[in-house]
Length: 422
Image (tube, rainbow, N blue to C red; front, side):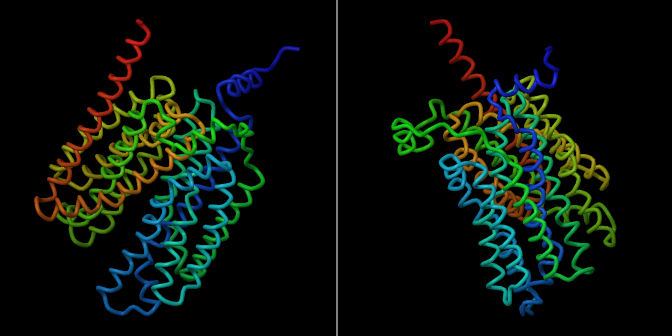
């Protein structure tokens, strides 16, 4: 009997390091990541209202507590991402996704029952500590997908994550007037609980190799000691940081910058379009650039994306109309969309599978750090040197990142060539 093309393709994928159920795993991970990211970001539009509802009346205090409550989740998530990655390496990636989805479902529901602002901040911290579904999904998909399809699969996952960041605030603006603020949190918790059920019953993780005495010794030495050449992993940590700095550096100045281009009554609407433009571009391009990277090389796409983003930042500093800024941010999102899947792919291809989760956790932490550093840096530079300096300074950082990655890539190629000639 002649085997079907589908069975041949599946056998090829399995021989390329992929798990038999990697496609179903990818679908569940995209759904779960989208759901949890929506839950983490939907409170943006109504967070000040909820803080006021919890008893804070002073305007400055409302703003301050809103910032603390929102940033608490990402702060705690950045701290524990390497820990969850290491535990995923030790005890299984699916187990970490089950833990994360169930923990997030409980935490989001509890946020809806907060009685004061201290409880709100503490529960947001708890959500970050218990969360990590998106980063855990990245580890599972990166290690269970055939190596030849890793870029595409991680691109699809990145699109789901970025779609959650885009859709979350939209849902947060629609639901509270319809069902109430507290009920919105309960609805988010229920949606994440559905993701928990899907994770528990649909994801199939490939059997883990038995632990040997040698592997136990390597784990005691730490993840970095298990990596022969650390340059690729370090380069990806830097690239993840730069990606988030480039995305977030404009956030503190965007409304003021747009106010110079449009009338007062249109400022908030246009600023929303500018912020959404980059996210939409990344959603559209992530899977396509990931697929391209599988063919031409992940590092080539990383260098190209950073270089294109650096070029696009220059005209953003000199726009004369709002539509120009929206188009340029959209194009920049198209360019940056390929970075997240390629970063994870390079790490997966250059570190042992037994420590992939730990190092991908470090990568997630570096990206969270970029989300913190980006707005701080953008606000400082914009306030002291002017708003154009934010775009031009970010351009220099992105160009430096492209040059750094190209240097590391060339150095590795020369080292391999020298080894082959011996």
